Image 1 (cartoon, rainbow, N blue to C red):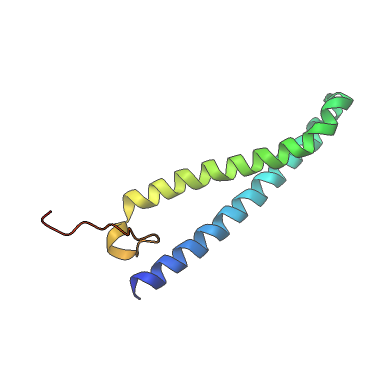
Image 2 (image 1 turned 30 degrees about the horizontal axis):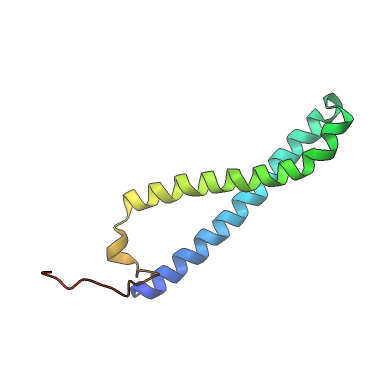
Length: 95
């Protein structure tokens, strides 16, 4: 496989991983909320669903950042992946 296909597959798999992580964290927080709902006051129950939604997105980004950092340390990025954004003002070697 060439670098462009590797980059495309990496982006697609990272996106799927991020979506799965978001859904799993949302479900886990929803289960936690269902168990703690009887201890919460009425006002907190109204705001809990938006909080769970935002918290699941934040958790997924945090997990994504950790996993991506681990992969970048293990894989030589320049060797296997094509740059997504190429610089217009690329410096020539020797300048």
